[in-house]
Amino acid sequence: MDVVGKETFGALIDAGTFPAVSIYLTTHRAGPEIQQDPIRLKNLVVEARQLAVGSGVRGPEADRLLAPISDLIADAGFWQHQEGGLAVFRSADRFDVLRLPAPFREHASVAHTFHVKPLLQVLTRGERCYVLALSREHVRLLWVSRFRVGDVDLGEIPTDISEALQHEDLERQLQVHQSGVKGRGSPTAVFHGQGMGKETSDKRLERFFRTIDRGVSKMVEPDVPLVLAGVEYLLPIYRSVSRHPLILQGEVTGSADGIKDEDLRERAWGIARSFFEQEKDAALLTFTSGAARTEKTVEGVVRAAIEGRVDSLFVDATATVWGTIAETSVTRHDAHRKGDRDLLDLAIVETWQHGGSVYLGGPEGTVAAAVLRY
Image (cartoon, rainbow, N blue to C red):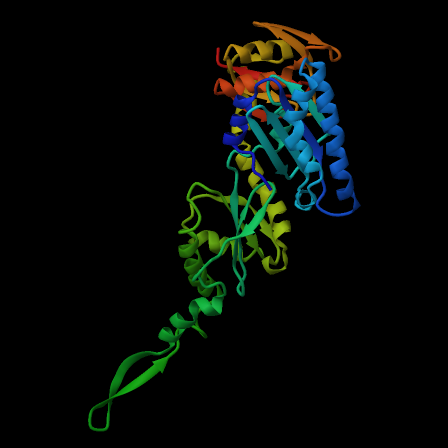
């Protein structure tokens, strides 16, 4: 799976020069649909060629431009390693093939810039968290993102309570004290156990979890959130001893040993999502509260984006608004006309290039809305 971060997204926005070809389609990892995926790409390449020629590109030039994409159609190995969707970008000096975790509506376009709006649904701003799955017998640490989960090797950190406390228990049980004198003055050694019989279960868990926390604190960055998973009585004990500053309030409850990694990812991401959406929520609050100037017409949003006045842009990635732009004059059309471009895509490109933030979704009833700088 490829990752679309700020660097990749920004590079695609900056790199487009006419003709810039963008192709999106849904792909499959298994099943009979795999056989249809190359055919879908072939049809989209044919559509892209027609669009290029219709835009004034000579046929042979269009064929040369599209040749690297056409080569993928017959590459059997390529189609055996797909994700949920495929995004392909081609210009005279760029060729990007992104295997992405989300499906895409089939689309081909030829324009002066790449069509980037569909990428918003998979754009990551570095969002990730860790999940610490706790039990007495087995402790796991996993990294989690919106689409993926993976194990973190705990190395020498003991992962069950017996392993963690065995040496400590032995020392505590074999403590020796002088209890007096016997015979000709030789000391009598008296052994007594302080841990196993008298120490409460909770105290043993605290000792165990402190050991785990010392190791985890070396692996988990202090500004990355941690989600706890396990049976309910264990989690408050870990919280009470942990030094990690960002343990989220939500928890994945239930036997951690019986939860599959993917289920942990889904449930943990449901908890972490609100943490990562705080920035967007703050921008939405600014929009709705009237604390700053705003714009909610497509024409107004596009003009403000071109002028560098958009601080935060909210856009419906499923919508397309056709129109033309001449300097700062924006004309919107009800249907596609020759020479039109997607005005929402233009707003995204201009906002990004002027240092603004772009978010998927927004105020109800809008396809585009913006918080303005002035």
